[in-house]
Image 1 (cartoon, rainbow, N blue to C red):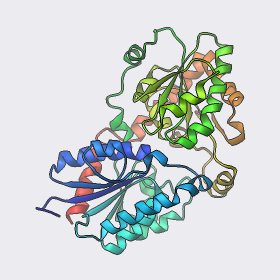
Image 2: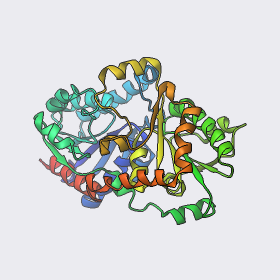
Image 3: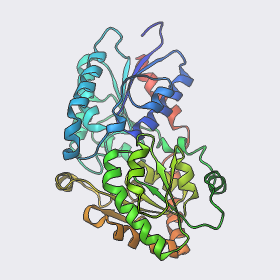
Image 4: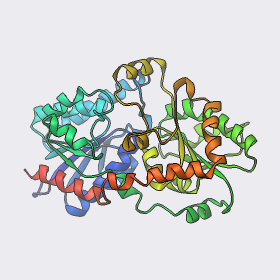
Length: 381
């Protein structure tokens, strides 16, 4: 620590982690303006004041087969960060943000270097790979839980834990209203709008977007006049999406305004991930889909412990949102799940009513500040 100001290493490896990490960086700066922030993340964490040593967010993948091609780059990033943990400017604390395959290995290195570890958005041991809790107990000093059912699980396993709430609550504070979102996107009040959210990884665009576009064509034929807007994640090259749009229905590509797309839409076709929780909190009905390689699917089926994958259903504890995975996740499957919702306002309202239960379960805004206070307490020990 230089001049008494704490040095904090933060590590995120995906677009959602970069988003949540940026909020934490801003909160840390607000509480301790002189603190030094450095590590691995993306453009948002860099913009929030973190010195970026590594960035793998644009190439993040899901699944074991899909990850093979990224091993050399990830190993290089790991070596760089591991060296910094024991170097002359070592951090007072290491903050891990999701990305468990990578981060739990780094936690082991931090433990060996005598650097305390705080895990923000910890591994979903309640969903799959529950054995990871043993590594967390050995290498992590404090878990910052984001779901209300996590603290009891971690305490039961002997892991120090504090519930801070889910960071999406902070990020949604400035989300536009439905009316302002439609104005910003040039959509008239009475138009029926379907939003497409194909994900933040290139692999998702390639595997999921074609089915979404097939579904859009079928929806457009069944409900003439339907408009389509695609929320483009900052980690995705616009040209990759544009290359798949030719020959299909007109789709407006909207970059940097995902919340506007969510608010403006009557229904979403969404890739499983944090965006399903954001959409639920914003009150927009959805159909969720996902595809992995066959190898990854077989591996996950052996380990998964819950009946749903979308965070909206998992948090609510019941099947509120239709989910389509692997072979069921086709254009016809998505359209078949979406059309009854589009044609029945009451069915969409049923989803919205269920979504109303989420806000109170996930805590209150101010998540970044609560997490930052606990991180700084660890760094000062």
